[in-house]
Length: 122
Image 1 (cartoon, rainbow, N blue to C red):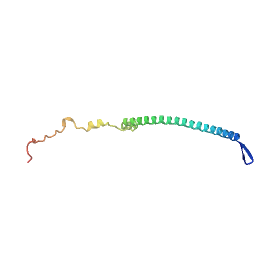
Image 2: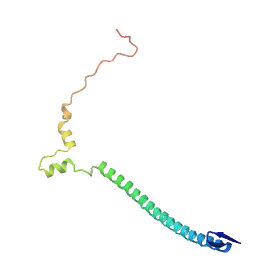
Image 3: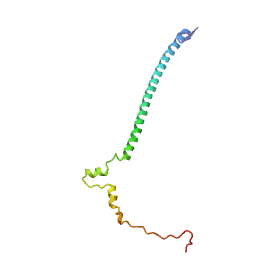
Image 4: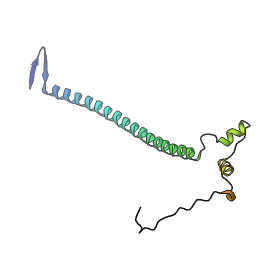
């Protein structure tokens, strides 16, 4: 079967060949797109794994910093600062012992008089 198309004659075999060439060309493009998308997904998986590992390290680092902060290891202690500045330092326990009155001169609490529960109030 032949058709007139402008000044040229197109046969059905020519149309089929053109369709095959076009589909092969598009199949090649499609395969290239699939290959690139697959490569991008693989790259995304690697990045996702790296982010997960970094998140674990950050969580561990956060816990370590908090633990060190609660132990008082992030800043110098008052005793260390006093030694560096050549000034006296008195620990809190020594200060409390010095401020506490001696046991022999302790003031005795006066004993109050309590009324028995059953007596009425005046």
